[in-house]
Image (tube, rainbow, N blue to C red; front, side, top):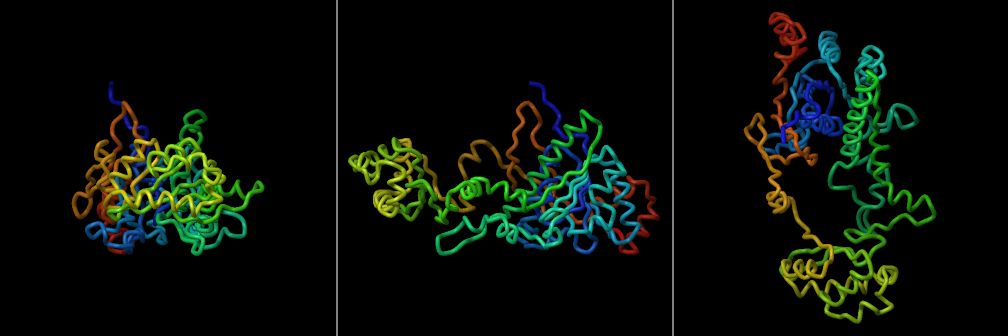
Length: 398
């Protein structure tokens, strides 16, 4: 099969971005072939660069969200720095920003202003709560939006609500910004016009709350917090094994329960016992149901428990930590790991989950140093070496 170009080759993206939501969105675009120009502050750049030093001295958030981009460091409060961004945008297909509320509008970099000046441009505003409404000016960080969107209310144990262990609100907004750009590019291909795209973290995460939200909206009680257990299915939980591991299993129907009772628990009579024979009965007697499963698995090592569950046709999984994820045999067998360049040398990274048969592999470019491409980009917009030197001397560029 002939190799096809990556879908976004020839597309240029300019991003005034920070933290996770916009950088993760534009990283998806870069992986699919777009040229992404990342505009950063002169004094330290994207503040995610300083979150930690876990990735061999670099911040793990930044490494994750910023490969394959060109970094230009500019002071946008100086008219000369802002003029450079305007020149970059004039030649771009897509502009993305997630500055604090009102900051982009003050700079003339909000989607409405830019699209009025450049009809073919697709401009994306990412915010915490949207550009209007009583919360529009409220500061929005991931954990705060997880709380506002109700995610924390359904996550954790009966005694303690907890936030998700990943920045779920940021990721949700990023993926809707990514898909919004793709949709707008398709529309531009048929109409010749771009236009504004707006994504808010609250609305993105509220959409992801669909199942518990609809459960509560239409007459049901809000799902209880049940830790690793499922609120309305039993048995569906993680159970300790004899060698210190934990195995999660899920029984989705009563036929599976009968197989579990016979082939794993070793008590086939439980398959037809009215106290356990239906999911409703098992949920009503959840503690006794879980105790039966836990007793059976506690007598088995992890590998034997998984083997028995697989043989019985019961959905199951090993409860892995992050090091075990990095060594996952499925990821290894599918050759999902690659090396990407960075200022500290090669770093291991996962291929993005979109696989395009017949096309080239995703372009996993280097993680840029702050201002690594400033000189080249300033020259590309027509500046002379003397002008560039003056910007650097005045602290407008780095």
